[in-house]
Length: 203
Image (cartoon, rainbow, N blue to C red; front, side, top):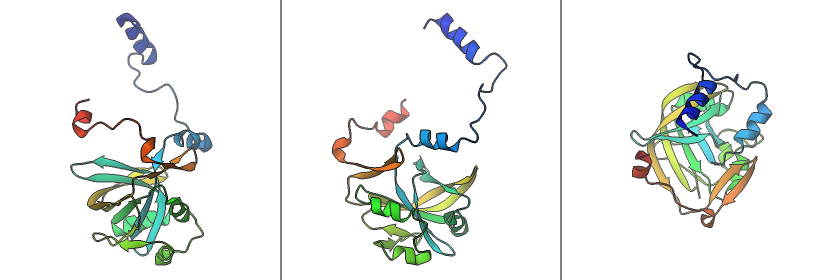
């Protein structure tokens, strides 16, 4: 595209003085939104916290935020027991699941499981040394965090946690969620390599 063509395109897309997109926000069609968001593959974690009760839940709305300071975030539905637990306790832990731990993802997503500490009777776990929140045995890796900030995220809250402790297990195969189902990713499935931190910063 020529320089004149680019200028014409930009004037057509965003006329002078009009700084807002031409489309209204998507409202009311949650199924379509779920389907589109489901095309983004994510890892699976078990989020745990100790407040008035000990609680765990399956969560894939997790992301790293910052290395300095060390921050991560999780998004939790406002009506969920976990939302109250994290807000009351001010801390949480995350266990990242391996490819052979789909049963844990399904278990902690099942509303019929026991409540409180009893829900952990069926799984292998240890209390985190920093927060006391359960860390699941066999996990790929784990993090313990203190609650740093909380932000409004519509029907969810965005909890930003400062990492207090962390560790990695021996597993090398990951459990992913894609297209509404679980998938196992083996090391041989990986093609190419991620850029290093210095390469990312140079872009």
